[in-house]
Structures are given as C-alpha cells and as structure tokens.
Image 1 (tube, helix red, strand yellow):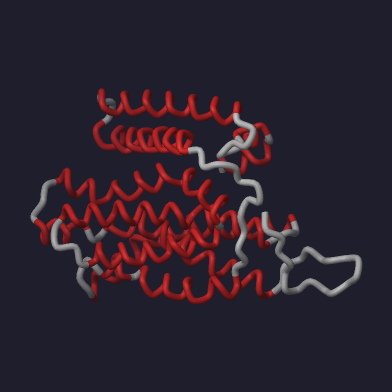
Image 2: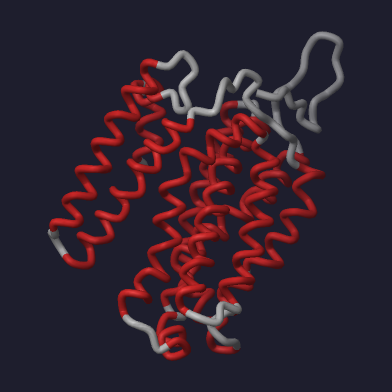
Length: 286
C-alpha cells in the first residue's frame, strides 16, 4: 500500500501524527460523489419506467432487463474490479470508472431503442463496479487513524444508503420538468467535478506486491455473484422456478470453488481468512 502523509501532519524529526486534516476530509467528500451516484442509479428508474415504456413501446421482459442489467453486472464485477484496483492503482481505476460511467450515462440518456438502453445499462454496471471498491480502498489509505477511519467508512456506508433512498425522489423531481433521459444525465456534471478534484485531493495507492492477475478467480467470482443476484431477483418476481434454483446451484458451486482456490494460493485475489475476524465479518454483514 502506498505510504501517504496527511496534510495536517506536524513536521517532526521523530514523530508523525496519523490524524487526518482538512485535505483528507475534502478527499472523502470527493469520494462520496461516485458512491452516491452508483446507489442512485440502482433506484432512479423507479418513476421513469412508465415514460420509457411509452417511448419504446417494448415488452415487459425488456423493461425488466433495463432495470436489472445494471445491478446484475455491478454485483458480478465488484470483487474482480477491487482486485484490478489493487494491482493497477485504485485512483487510476476510479478515474477510468468515472469517465466510463459518464460516457454510458449519456449513451443511456439518448438511447434510440430499448435494446441499446439495456446495453448502456450494462456499461454503467461495468464502470460502476470500478467505482465502489476503489472508493473504499482509498479511504483506508487516506485515514490512518483508526477512529477517523471508522467514521469515514461509516460516512461511506451512509452515503450508499442515502443514494439508494434518494434515487426515486431525484427521479421524480427530474421527470416533472424533463424527459426520462434526464435521470441518467444527472451523473455527468457530478462526475466532471470528481474528475477535476480527485487528482488534487486523492493520493494514488496500490498493492506493492500484487502478484499475477488471477483470471480463474475473477471468472469464479463473477460466476458466484451474478447467478446468485439473478436468483434473488428471479425469486422476488416469479417465486421458486427451475431457472432460479439452477442459478443458486451454479453460484454456490462457483463460490465454494473460489474460496478453496483462495485458501490454496500464497497471494490470493481475496483473502477469505479475513472473514474469521469477527469485527470484520460483522461490519460486512451490517
């Protein structure tokens, strides 16, 4: 992990204070922008779907894919993107994710067909998955004091929850004054601010000894997350079906294989032994 000296550190020949200062908290504010956007994009379509349905005159199945394609891809790629951030630079991945998210937000807003809107939502899921793990890892690197770090992570979690709750409200306000594509264009100015201030406030960090990219583990992580999230959505919509049950079986089989692979590797993509630490596991469950 890249060593980072907070701006508030008092110069001393022997002692350095780990407490974060104004610059670090401004960096947290910048990192909250993509967290809010990713969460908002999960729920912002709630009120836009009737207008989208009228605009494209499409089937109910396609409308469901417009909603579900984004969280499915996002969930499936989170672990993999976290691994890429560790290896190639978390701030770099954040900047790439923000740029791609802005581009696909414009593509979604002006999509001429429902099928292209689904494709744009898939792109948003890919680049959204780059944003979430990068922000949390960067917070860990910026806030060296344990108490401040806990507060920063709490703010991060609260921001994600707030974004999910704000999505329908923001969508409703925009649709009162603009067409349905405005719910996607909301991301563009916010991400422009993020791209402008991140190089000034947020330090780069990466794993100093990342090892080789484990493509098998990446495939297994996607094969675990995506089918299970798909099954949850399928159960919620259609109840118990053979397709949903098969997705659960595939997801759990891939998950067991993934865990076994991580335990055997000297430099795992995800150190699953962390889940034996009760405070860590409790925080993740919450």
